[in-house]
Length: 210
Image 1: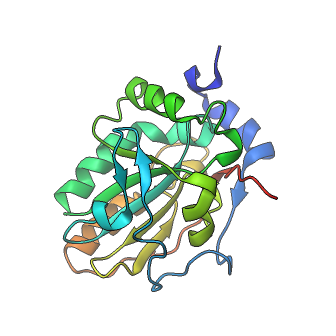
Image 2 (image 1 turned 135 degrees about the vertical axis):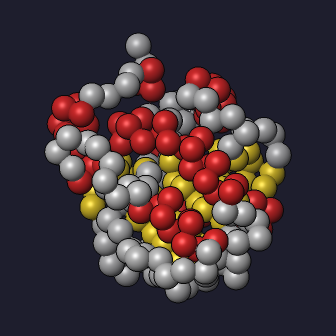
């Protein structure tokens, strides 16, 4: 059975986190809140077959970028929220794109065909799910984990980064703080985003190094 078919329990998430989890905050290599989005015109292949960039995806109030994949247990634990996040983003006039930067697994579980199958299986609907060739966008962002989220405003300046919510911070794995949804809502309403910098938890992005 393929790993992507499994729905991890809270216990398995905790166990696997010993091996896969990275908690990154304030890393100098990661773009900072207030900085402009890099590589906004870089075209990536979507599971729809289209070539799209962040500029193409951006809506009136900005764009949400989520670095994701098919197999990381943290993604599997969070991805049921993706369609709901897409609805919240649409309501806030914010574009959304899921980016798969796992270049080292491109011939296997994170291949383009596997991405299409995974998106259909998990009910991604019309979500933009794209291939980041050679991890170019991830490197430009300094993205570290799957998932790792970056929210930009209408001027493509970073206003929020880090985690989707506090699910992995709580022993019972319940959501008490909806960081990303709150950030999108506040962005759309012109309110201060607090917190704007949260700690991403997930598997490392599988880059190919020369």
